[in-house]
Length: 223
Image 1 (cartoon, rainbow, N blue to C red):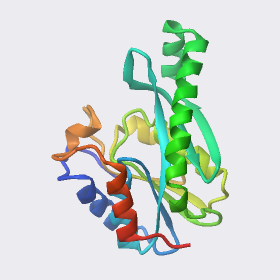
Image 2: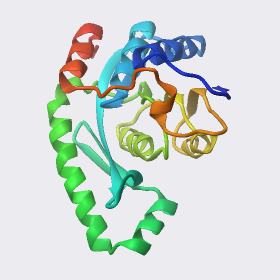
Image 3: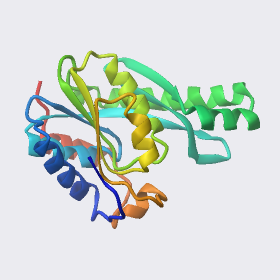
């Protein structure tokens, strides 16, 4: 379900509230698990979980940036409930290999994985079981889709009944690519001239770990 066209959200919470209504209309409810990708996805996931009465959790991801273009992701790493996945975006990884040796890119992966495991450990207590349940993975938006694909791949190892992606904004091409990993992809706005995710928010300030802990404490998790 996509609404193609430009749209600006007040903040991540407002975007999550819109997505929560869309998911409720799809029939999702309290049997679902809603996972926000750390860090920006958690403020989106919290109002979704509240609307559905669902479990709320946090999933650790880090993108793998090209050394001199760190905003361009050649892949991503994801960790959840002691499972760990490395995902490469084929076309961007090949571009990176033309500019850097495999050893340099391996170093980027090792450094990102070390930071990821520390982040994941900090939120281990907020990782609901996904086995046999519908899992909704949320982020504040997608650019390459690398982090979301890594998240989908790691959750798929846990035996979910189905996987749903819910994001406020994304390029249409990325949404099509994600359909290979998810049972459903829900996106509110898919602008034809997509730029950066932050462009579509009035408030796109960084999300701190204390803020994530506050959201999880407020909206709670269910076993």
